[in-house]
Every structure is written in C-alpha cells, then in structure tokens.
Image: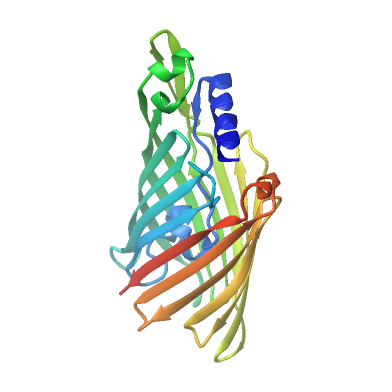
Length: 292
C-alpha cells in the first residue's frame, strides 16, 4: 500500500516537473495559533507567548506523508506595538518547505473594551526538493537537490472585543515564481496568493464554563475554498475540550489545558474523511506554549 502511494507521488512529479508551494498547512489548534496566519495577532493577548513546539503528522502509517513542525513567539514591544516571529517547516515526500516570517502589529483602541490590530508579515519560503530519491530512470532523478527561495509579505487585521474576535489576513500576497534550468530541465517554485477570514465567540455560561464556537475560511489561488468549523468548551479557564471539522477533508478531537497560568499543553487527533481514508485514519497534533 505504501509503495502504491509513493508511486502516485512519483508520477505526479514526473508529470509536472515543477515544485509548487501549497497553502499554509492547516492545524486543529488554529484559533490558539493565529499568529502563524495573521500578523495582526502579535501582541494582542497582553502576554509574551512562545510556542515552543508544534507538530502535526497528517497521515499516520503512510511513508513520506505530510508532516509539519512549527515554532513561534510574539509579544508587546510597547503599549501599541506588537512583534513576533514564526517558523514553519512542511514536508511531504521529496519536497520540504520552510517558511520564516517576522510579524509586526499596531493597536488602535476602539471603545472601552475593543481594539483593532493592524499587522504586517515579511519573510520568505525556502524550498528543497530531492529528486535523487525518485527510484526511476527518468532524467529528473539526476537533478539532485533543487533549492529556491521566494520572498513574500502579508497583511492582517484582528478585531478583539470582550466576547468575540474577527480575523482577516492575507499571509501571502505575492504570487512569486522562481525559474531555474537544471541539466536542460526547467524547475520552478511558486507562492500562491492566500487569504483567510475567521471569527469566534466566547459565550460565558457562568464563572466556570464557556462555550467557544469559531470558524475560519481560507482561500488559495487555484485551490478550493477551505472551511474549518470549531466548537470548544472551556472549564475554569484552564481546560478546553472540543472538535474541529474541515470541509470535505477531516474532523479532529482536541484537548488542551493550562498549567500554572504559564504553560499550555494541547493534543489533537485528526480523522481523515477524504478519499485518503482508504489508506490512513489520520494523525496526531501536539502543542506546547509558554506564556509570561
């Protein structure tokens, strides 16, 4: 079964002979890690937050299946300015992509209990494709490692009120392309235009129990619109349990808890509902965040 899927991947690369950037990898804990998508989120929590480690294995049991590791940090530089840094590495089969971006935000107070944050993201994506791993006689596997770097930037807005939030972001505004000829074969790496719109509401039943519905829509040029719908219950402001549904793709069960008001631990498991479910049930996701 693994060999069948690997062969499919080889055929796809031989058919296109290109390297194309995918959308920012999706996460079950997207609401807790909005700084990975929206630069305006930097500094909005009033704390310095360091996502020490984030990890997602998308299809357990399939060799060279998509996996993602990410780290991020953000906080307030002063009363109105937030700064942050995000690093994400996404790997599937012979392709590896590493995104490194700096985030900046500026707070505009709106009323007594609401703020509008405007953000800028700047950085780029490193691409590395190891064609030598293709077990074929095609000239592609003589290319060795093909590397490229695409600079990019993004914009974002984040509105935070007492009981709800709205996030609008375009983390990749440039549809940048890099072309290179290697041994007579043209290779290219590209960033597709990407945008997202999300919102969430904190419905407080009492001092110990809060229901949090949230939704995120993602648009990537050339791909179907993706929608994540999330519903969580928070207990005593420390424990959170819930689920996330990704349209035509998967659903996730997630759990997180706060330790001593400075450490968040989270675990989720994503169950695949797409055609890939014939080969795998899904995969886990982990989160470890320090706050001070």
